[in-house]
Amino acid sequence: MDALEAVARETGIAIDSADFAQTLDKRDPLHALRSEFAIPTIAQVTGNTEGSTDPCTYLCGNSLGLMPRAARRMVDEELDEWAHAGVVGHHRHTQGRPWIGYRDRVVSLMAPLVGAQPEEVGVMNTLTVNVHLMLAAFYRPQGRRTKILIEARAFPSDHYAVESQIRWHALDPAHEMLLATPRASEDILRTEDILRLIEERGDEIAVVMLSGVQYYTGQLFDMPRITEAARARGCIVGWDLAHAAGNVSLQLHDWNVDFACWCTYKYMNSGPGGIAGFFVHERHDNVDLPRLTGWWGHHRDTRFQMTNQFEPAPGAAGFEISNTPVLVSAALLGSLEVFARAGGMQPLRKKSEMLTAYLEHLLLTRVGHDRLRIMTPGDPAQRGAQLSVLFTDADFGLVFQALMAAGVVCDERKPNCIRIAPAPLYNTFADVWRCVEIIRNTII
Image (cartoon, rainbow, N blue to C red; front, side):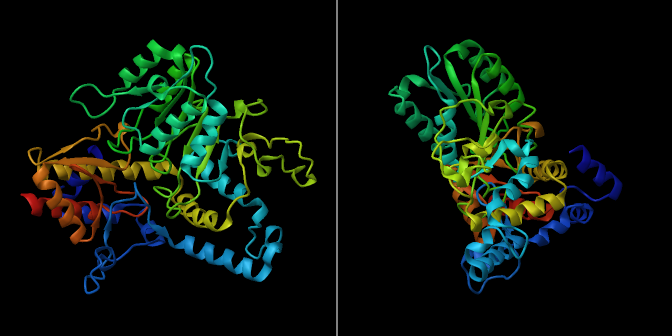
């Protein structure tokens, strides 16, 4: 807000005006990146064939990111390579991207976005499959240390994965799932309550596995403090970064996280069901973890000797099961190239904080506390590019219908929550202003 107010003082333009949003967009150093994405029209997202051909207002990157134009180009190039070269494309490639080394190309661009060394990052499968594979290696219940700590309202996939992993070890989830719950009448988990839980019950906890950004509330957890506290009590620490990767600044290596998993189709824009990423800290290299293995995890220097004597590749590559699916990875590469053009997470995070602060300000001043409540923390350090907004039961349906009818794409979570996520790669301040104006005109 300090930065927004400074622009208002300098220009003499009211913060609440459409002119102010347009001024911010003109000053945005990342504004040109918007042209790198295919933005659906209002007619397309509303299903009205006679509707407007103007771009829609897409504020749903927390669910599925928009398509980078480079993704289509790179997928088409791989289809052409397959058509023209067949198996030869594994080693000799017209575009200089031989398939045998595709995962290295993806990892080299993705690792900086999560604060990891390239050797610590892998690419395979989808998010929940990777959660299972990581827990298979790192959840080793012994003695008193048998529990897994997660949020009480974790995303269902995490809940199910943890529950089934506990059962896999012939244990009872009712006793071994330790659920972190907000205080009465509160929406978010206080960091001090998580730390207290870890301190009091750390000798019972085998794995702490929380979300980097909580999908429903939009809360960004204090990952470095929680990781440090849990590791000090002897716990393995893993993070589900589905809503954090490509959204907030991460330093997985420096924070000494043990493992992490993330999808890439949200803020990383890899397309529906896109390939997922994972992290294993380098200190676990050359450690005899009881991982589930496959041929692609064998050391590349001896992989084709076919000895059937597993020799793990160094780093995260040793946890990969099967060879990299090129077509879905090409779509991800198209997005990662745009991240590289943006200069990485630091400038994106700076713009994201301003977009989200502007959204918050407009909601509270143009709509008001009496017609909505923002569940997401007000502190920018405790949230990413998302506000979870609660409406009355009477307003909720009206607002969501009005937004969708106007071509403003958000995400609803019944009974009364609308998640609004301005993504800095392609969203504008004018997008935010238009969204709030429609809400205001609907219920004020």
